[in-house]
Figure 1 (tube, rainbow, N blue to C red):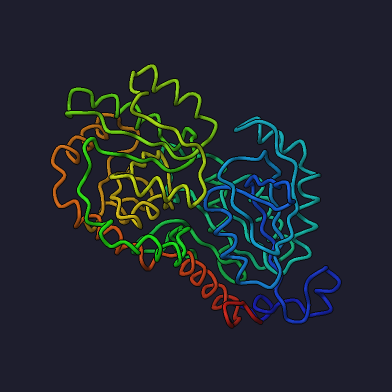
Figure 2 (spheres, rainbow, N blue to C red):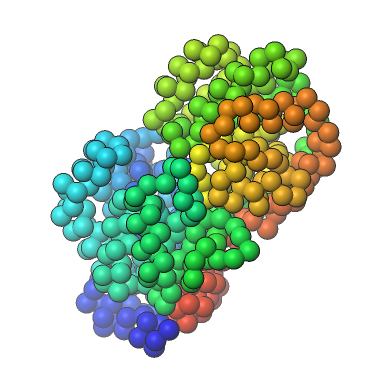
Length: 414
């Protein structure tokens, strides 16, 4: 690392660029994540994003979030307190149409993103994603310190996209020096030179403590009929249609069909509800919509098995959420599922997009659910060191080391 790459801008340079000065460090996050304001003007979003942004924001003195303005949704949680939010217009459509929309509005998106990146000392790009990638390239162009996190599957698979391949290639080219790069997952060897694995987590230490306040919760046997849960977006790559088809295939193979709770929302919800009706298993499936952490906890306390049939994934926060409640996981063998779920007696993995394999594994699990309490306790024990606070410290320590900075009372300092 050269001396120039490890030095923050001088106070005079920060003043010219709109930075914070006085040794304070300003972070700008550029993301495609949709957010909205409530009636009181507070910005909200869903999933693990608000919690993870609160964690990353805690490392810095000042934070700007460049997000997409979306429609209000249930299960919203607040963005980091004190963060300045800059809302972009939402691209039109999905997939190819969305990409064309971003290209058509490129001067607008680049103008706003460039203005905010130029004012910051550090840029964070949660990848993959079209607007996040624009933030990534803009940070490189302005020679800003960069934290890039690739949350999808680092290893190409059948769901791989051209955008994902371009993003991984760019991360490999520019990793190192002022550019801190993470890939979602776990492994014995790094995903690429100068890139590190990082497990996604939204579990706070306080939440883990609350979950563990009743030790007998981890001694329960599997119920009959069993209660299954899915957690996540309702979009094609999450494979929920595979789970519904597998559930329908269990008719006659078990004394009674398991009860399935689908926690989350997305573009595929109507199609999935229709599929459940067509397969005549809608009576045993419940859709909750998007939930906040409290609502998620209520559902998980009432579940026996978490089923995550993703067709592609890096490391899923849902795996850890379930295991924190002592719930074993049945997941597709994607990303880090083999290491996190399949090892240590915490769960099972099956090939992705394979209805028969998923149905067969469900029969094996539910027909003879041996050692259920022991399995629950192993799941719980695994999550104790995988909190949001530990995730944040890992990012902070890596940045401090790579940028030749210090981590003082949880803040990055020159």
